[in-house]
Figure 1 (cartoon, rainbow, N blue to C red):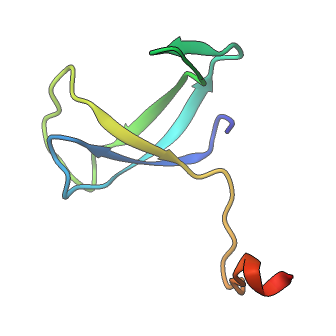
Figure 2 (cartoon, helix red, strand yellow):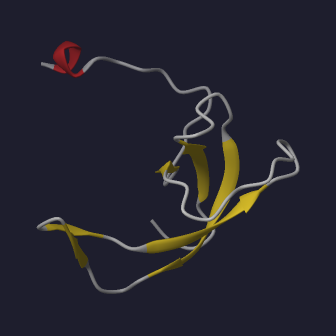
Length: 81
């Protein structure tokens, strides 16, 4: 994950809407969340596609897209043995 990577954001309160975003900054050190190490990052969100008012404190699932292959052939791992 690095700045500029695209992101898809889904808020728990708005599960039918997928917002586009982009990673702005990645903290160079890990943080501890409930006893587990995690990477902390900041992302922007594009509200043009879904012009809704987002309230402070909403929780969301954020998927960072680190790489993409268009037109690639998918082969199950089991087929490679």
